[in-house]
Amino acid sequence: MKKRTRTLFRRGVLAVIPIEGIISVKQVDPYLELIERAEKTRKIRGVMIKLSSQGGSITGTELLYLALMRLREKKPLYVWTTMAASGGYYAACAAHKILAPSSAIIGSIGVISIKPVVTGLLSKIGLKMEVLKEGEYKDESFFFKNTTKEGREKAQAINREVYEDFVQVVADGRGFGDETARKVATGEIFTAKTGLDLGLVDGLGDFRGAMDALGEETGVPPERVITLSPRRSLLSGIFGRGLTGGARGVLEEFFG
Image (tube, rainbow, N blue to C red):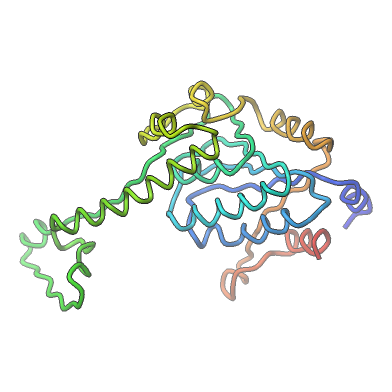
């Protein structure tokens, strides 16, 4: 690693962690270590999450959010986003500040579950499914069965539980009362410009402006920055998750 980079790091830096795409446990897993390292490395003075996500799984979102919440307890944590919808916005609520260009898509605060039902199609082609089960509701989620009233009520209860958690996360993260949080938790999407009026974002602008704001809070010039981004090679994809040379080198040099 170049001497200049070593010197830069000794003086303190800002870290940028880009996260994009659908949030799943598998997709989030490589980032959890990076977030923890950023949390524990004293010379990283502040962290910017560069986020673009339409959401994803409940569990993946929760794991990401919890890791970010631990990070925010130790140092300034900002999110700059071009899309923070559904689980993406859930995770963004861990940040001290959410910043975005005015046209960014945010919100979609809600929960949805979808089950295709093909009983009519199966009947037309003469295909019948035979099920052997133990547990009354074991096959309620199967696509070849119409959901019973009881099964629908149980599924809706799960949705409601997750939704209530989401509303609470928004209320806590944005400093909303319960009533205000529920007014924006309609499942609809907003532009960041509208989100600013609703209190869902803290400021509008480009990434450079967001880094300037983080630099001002931390006292670290925004040009003193490192990007932490897990990358997987073909071989690591075949033989197991791991960082390729460039990113691994950053981790070993800065954190090892």
